[in-house]
Image (cartoon, rainbow, N blue to C red; front, side):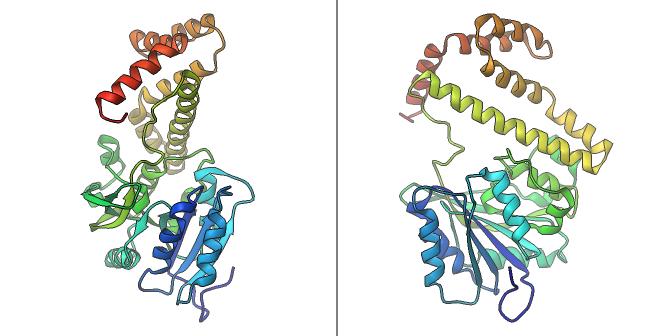
Length: 333
């Protein structure tokens, strides 16, 4: 990968991540290329979609006439969020890396404003976030969703006392931070808190006081309405693996910092790690006898909670019916 035109190393690299988002990829990629300032390095990356997303990105890049250096690439096979991030960070030449997702939409001066905020810290901060505007599936804009002001979190102790509310789609972060901690666990799906944790262990984090991203609702973080028990089991297994991956990543990053940080994270996670492990192992059991034996073995967890989760596995159909009723009462179905 060569430098930007003129031979200068880019200060900013935009990491544009796409997967199965052909219906939105063109508008989002064009908004990415329309960013002011620069020239920036822009990596339009598709995680081996089957719906034509990659071809859309190729066409957008071919039609582009502007100052930014644009690279289009595709994963050789679907690798998931964690590996996708790792691959793009390794390719990026910039010092500040800005995340953009193919189902969201960044305002034209997003990168410039985040870069200005970073420069105002003397390039010390390791993460810069912003607020978002809620966007529906059809592109209609709604209210501003405010994230927490990250500058109020001064260190890891503050993070452990109360995790800040953040949205990873708004994040810009330094490559030096990623070099310090190394690649993400390949199973990581929710990187938001991992990035904040890493930043607070280094140069700190801040929030730009403006909504710089139109954030599309109804994405992967939304709980589905299950049609049957098998669908619920598959979803629960996937979500549990994602939660375990995030916790493993936090533990690994804390270990790199030192024993005090690792002890802090272990205390912070508390019983959550045991809960997630229990749920995963429960989903892997094949008989009621195995489920009850597992429930008896997890004495760290409240007996009533273990029992309730075991019953969900033994009698999944009533659980699905109850969840569908709850969704209707919330107006989701």
